[in-house]
Length: 246
Length: 311
Image (cartoon, rainbow over all chains, first blue to last red; front, side, top):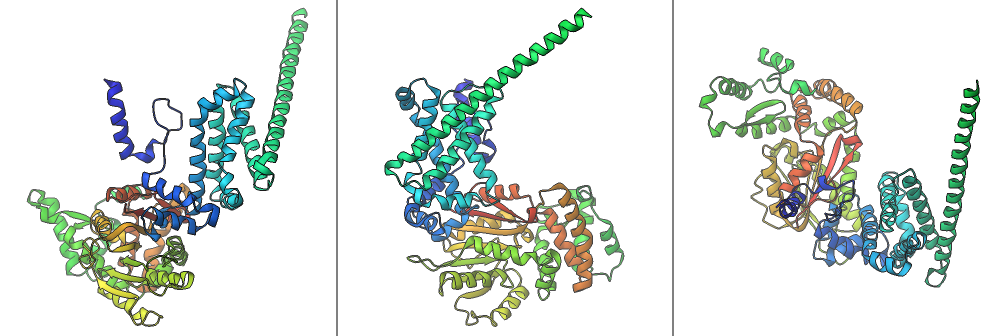
């Protein structure tokens, strides 16, 4: 009974308190939280179609409103203005990744490294159409008032990728893995804006180098950690034996 | 200051009651309002629906009297309105208003229609002139119109007088009308692109009714935008702000405009106005859709801009 009741109740709550239901944890039982109403999604997705032509500017937003039958003034409802357009792009491309999981699991096999690489590539391909205007988006994200949310979105992307490769880390690695992937991703994204090679071959090469760096540093850090642990225990045992001898 | 809100009368109000000749509200109406209050306290069983009360600053007054009390405040400050705002906000209100207009970015765009804008409680035309200037200078739009409505004829007269000194003097792009924001009977349904209300909504007797009226007059896709004093969101700054608004502003009102009571009302009405989140909730309840939290804080939340769209 409770199972039957849960969904309509949650649905009701969601319409009543939509902003209060942005969960800070993942739930397999619920759809991921969507901060956009259907009309906002329609406006913003049609506005993104104009970005390759006009860029991340008010005109794209106004055209987006017009295309789905709203007024030119409707754009004023977006509190963060153009940053809302950028955020929507980030949100949409991030949430698209989950649908690729079955395909990537099959094609890339069990290797975590390969699958992480593939997700990065798939996400970067989401920027392909607007890559010539992406520096405008980066500039908007770099405004001091926008930095916290832009970083949050990057953290969410990194978390999403680790989640999708079924990483079950529960120790301090949880943080380092996310931080290093975020660093790799954002530097590759920046490289991609300057890449003129056919179908972004250079970008994928760049990505491979960055991932290899992390792997090397990571393995060095972990060997350092095992060395430190071993030496630590050995020293304590040595002290113990000295003390017990008197 | 929250602990003082529960008290029926604050010390200065006792003082005010003691000196019959003191201040603007020591007229017959004010005395009758407090007499009514007294009566309703002692003979609460006789209270009828007609004497439902609302707040006027920290006082509770019968709903049908608030409108007139508010009108009195603004009639008395109409001429010194700008001075008053400058005094209260150190001139920052000009920056807020400019930001408000820049954010709404009103104006006819290539391939679009000229806009019909309704500026509610916009008596002196402060926001209306700014929007027309923005449309004209940024969008080269010489057609969009603003209808300024206010419940107070004195404020509208002041606005009309000011408009004669601008390029909109012929009245083809700006119009002034006395209207109650809760009714807006001269504004047809689905007729406006943009509804603005700047530093006005907290004085309305029935805010939800005004929001519903806004929803009625806007076209689908039309935007409701409100600039209003709000709650400071940094604890220590809030303490400073409360001290400033309750001790300095009424004193300045007395010194600058020789009208302490009106200024006292203004700071009390600010303190009584709902927080950013509650107000965003009220906007949604009236049928508007908001984006994100639905508001933007200005100067740590001293003021906030709320927007909603009719879908």
